[in-house]
Length: 105
Image (cartoon, rainbow, N blue to C red; front, side, top):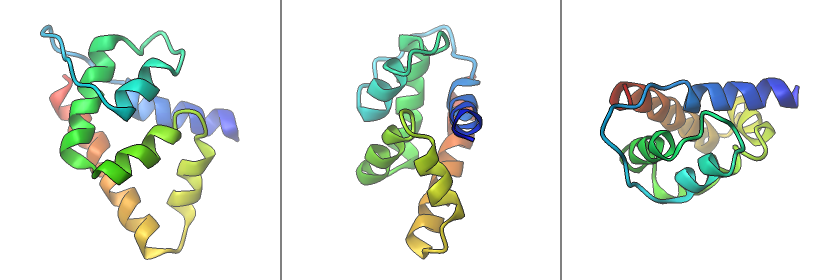
């Protein structure tokens, strides 16, 4: 189950095409992306994902989501939670993924 979730989180965040120009965004999402050990985690791609996170997620959200790179099970717990705050976070996370796909192509 953990591998499935790892794949899902990484696919959502890494399955992006990065434009020719470079990205210099820094932050917890960029750091988690770069430390994920995946070959797709290039500086440009991780910077682009960080830029999308900066636009779509709060600082608190970004800290939570960054932890999902190491422990994707946390994402599943939020997704399956009945708490309204977790549901709201999940909706923002989905919007972040959509934004990242749109701006990183």
